[in-house]
Length: 146
Image (cartoon, rainbow, N blue to C red; front, side, top):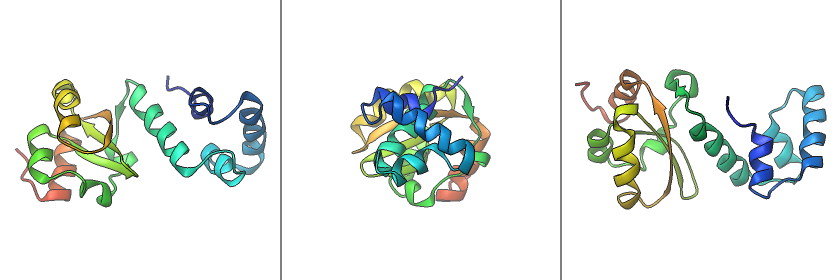
């Protein structure tokens, strides 16, 4: 089970437990996302929330559904097509100098070892089904599906 974003923000030193409790109380009434409330109340920055989301996403050992998550076209522009094709990675989100990459499980170890030295960003890796990565690569870069 994925770690809750409030706990991640506490672990990051952004929030304290009482703030998480207040946000959760408000969330029950407002139906807003946790991060939206934390930012609106000035207790976290958007960058803090993105960082926590990336940690939450990549820490879970679940396979990410790219059709559900979506791929940000601006993020795909941060990875050169040749690298994306070679490592079978698709950038799904980018903010500041952070980048979330989806990769098939069988290629994840190589991507984790080699891409940090090739891309000038803090990288977060999540696992996605190979066919979804292939489809996303084709859409983003017009890379033929192999």
